[in-house]
Image (cartoon, rainbow, N blue to C red):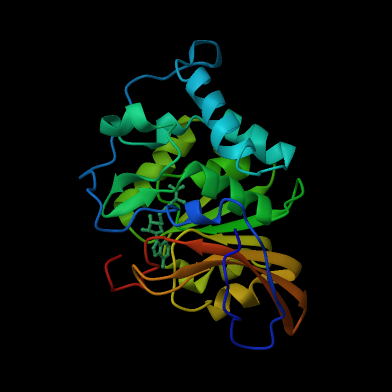
Length: 265
Ligand code: SAH
């Protein structure tokens, strides 16, 4: 099924990508109106590799919701196998941790659908050792998946309690090398720029100029763009030269909004 995309403003070249699973993209991130957990509660169980009660559920999610839906990069598939998503969801949603849909994480925010995490990660075309910036740490799940690819991960979150909880969780799970910052990701992380890749997990209504400026030449930005609750499109934007960017539409999606400092952060 083809998802028609609109050409982004500017001098970008726009190609359409046909995604068999495009219809499902609409469930990328739950609307902010979904029931939200009041707090982020870490689970009390600390499974070891040999005693992980969710191994089978995770494998089933990877086979039926990642591989079967068209994710092909072996490293990304392996990362989806390795990261324990149940550690990133509130206790009351544990039984749904490996279902292929977003879940509330508190403060009106969501942990993204596993397929969308895998798709966005794959479309970043990462090589080991590269530097990637994530906007919207949320639970920390996407950051952990990125870290499994042996890249340097920087991640920013605007809601302080989420930023704090994600930091504790990522440290506890052994993702100590991920750099985290509680700040407005619209402005990027200038001191750590340029980045080989930037992934935005909340939707602004336009592509933030600071993020384009902080991309390495040859670097890739994956970002949903569109109005709150309306039609949003997922873009893969490559910086082909200092002053040129090329965009490819990856289809329609639904993400929580990218908010600016002072607007709810
Ligand atoms: N990547 C997350 C999904 C998070 S949902 C995960 O794997 O769990 C989007 C997140 O973006 C929310 O936590 C929201 O608070 C955050 N966000 C929204 N606007 C932001 C901004 N301007 N800067 C940084 N984070 C932002």
